[in-house]
Length: 85
Image 1 (cartoon, rainbow, N blue to C red):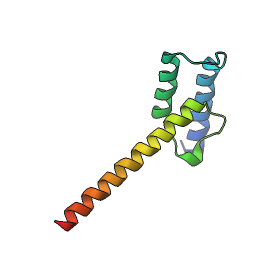
Image 2: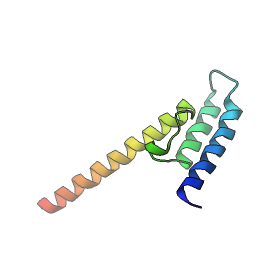
Image 3: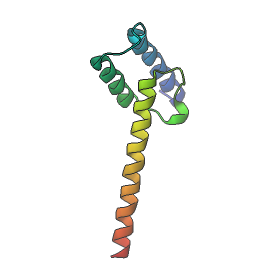
């Protein structure tokens, strides 16, 4: 499956997930965890995200972006320490 087909598939799956949660204005804890889990399992880069996705999904993907950036920064700092030693 090519990258475009994968994104189309993910978008379709996401729409199915969102339709399950479309009725309530406020999500209960379990529904929020399901959306956050879906976001982590189906993570895509920022440029491949749709603005129509649920705000919780987008927030969780941004959180994962930040975690990955922190991990990259920590790795670079470790490399600098090794080079200095």
